[in-house]
Image (tube, rainbow, N blue to C red; front, side, top):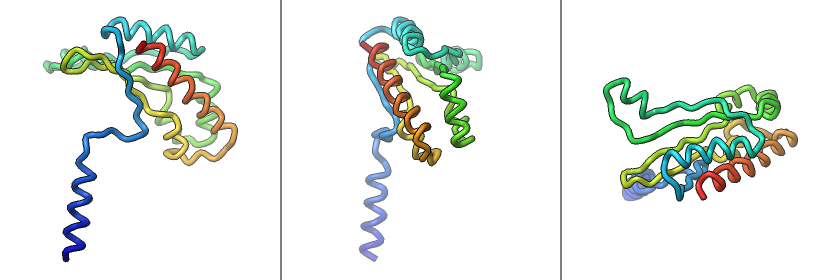
Length: 151
């Protein structure tokens, strides 16, 4: 009985953490929200990716009578790489196009966050070497975008 109680206590203790999973990458911006958004769009272009659009969560919340600090999801893609990844596993379409969220914290701090592409190889059980190379490049591109946007 003590082992069961100890096991439950350990699960509760470890399961209630405030830490995000290792598959999420978060960067704090040195700029205000609008400047960070502009830098993101420029960084996407510099990486040779196609900007597809923005989902303004604050605007949507206001349209529904709710309040939300600045929070937008930005979509962008490399169509050739995306097609190859989807060929490797059709479930990959769930994570494409690429997405980054920029949000403003309680104290005005601005953050950029995205899913680390390394996680996708596990999530979608990718073993194909060509697809793994695309994911390696995606890791580099996402890091470059985050670094250039938040500096």
